Length: 603
Image (cartoon, rainbow, N blue to C red; front, side, top):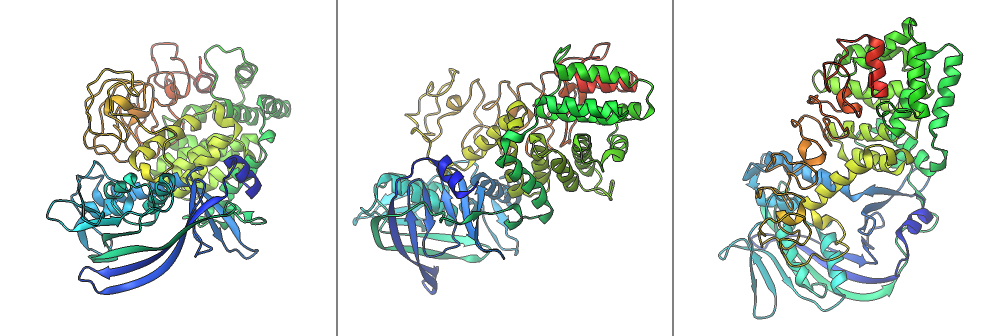
């Protein structure tokens, strides 16, 4: 987005800001001074930034974005990244060092050891509420301890400047900027003004012996200011971002360009015209792939559909009988789940194409290779999944699924920042309205916000008292103690035993329409039964979202570990005709029948 587009999406902005200046001092726990600095924090209409550093991030809580001004060879530009990517990184770091919350003591990268409490403080993620002892001093200060005899882990002196809304934004900005434990930081929710002073203890790999950090407010005053995206500051191009793998930049740029011109997204007729042109030239295989790419935009054909796209697929399959190249391609498509290596080899002749047929072939090859690499990292060393995703996007930049599956691949490589930028693109493009990214992204986003709510904007309406029937449709007894998110019965639509190890909200049936076993202690994305509408076995090896029955309307055997397209039973919306109900019948039917079924949803 350009500055003008961003501000238009943000809506009307109140130019009133609260400027606060702070002296920040750091000490050893014995009182020896370490360092100090002065910072100016500006609290605006739904955002917080730092005026003392031109390169400081603007945390825009209203839009859930992080804006960062960076220098390039052609001048400064503004990066625009989702908060959710940062939170996913914090969650992954927490999960890595605590073994998904199993360890009470963690070992830092330098070998230092400290309690899990301190990595919870640093990452802003914890598995369960941590009891705190909160006391008030005679002079009105608040002290937070882990137990009655423990050290003060957070102490604050109330102030009168600003409003409760300013305090809320400042507290959420501190979640991004300081390693204060989330349960201690929540003490600030009781304040009606910006604190006059606060201090906290830190234990971390950089401070294995501990340190105390003290913030003393020097001044606070209201003024006016424009939203901190300066005029004439261009939005960053993909090459201007700091990617974990720079090879993702061309893929992201293709998505940026497509999102900037949504009206140019091809409709169904464009695919039919392309397929007809290729078929008239005798390129039946290319025509089939072009129609396959159409299903990536609009979804698989339902059973016995009379829609023009589905009818044309059936006609083309019938016309391709006896064509050796066409039947070989059909066999490869039928083997996408049963024999992935053979399917990948069968797609190779089409990978150099830059048309819609090439878009389909490269996307299918990318997903297939990504799945094979989860078992054997040395398979097909001359191919790269990211390069294949990019080739597909360059041939058809409007295919939402390309960016979605590329994001899942990036997540599997622990590159969650790239993953969420790609997910952003996937849900922005018009094709996402008819495919899975919008629903899946919403589920993942909600799960991460439940795990670490303080990184995000406050809910649109404050939660009410903790009663059983507040937000649910089930009659379970209220657990009465979780006032922020409500009890389990308040966050789900069916009954389930309470999972005390899970963070913020339960991880079983809360976000789906079926019941399943809870993966207690899972700080990440949920299991198969948690994010789909059908029951099945969990495929725990897949990253980001599940790969079994999540995106289909039929039941089938789980293809555990796959990160790409689903099995035949998962890809179509009906059960196969014949003796096999829902499993791949590629081995029992000819390649034409099997391939037709995978494409068209019926025999």
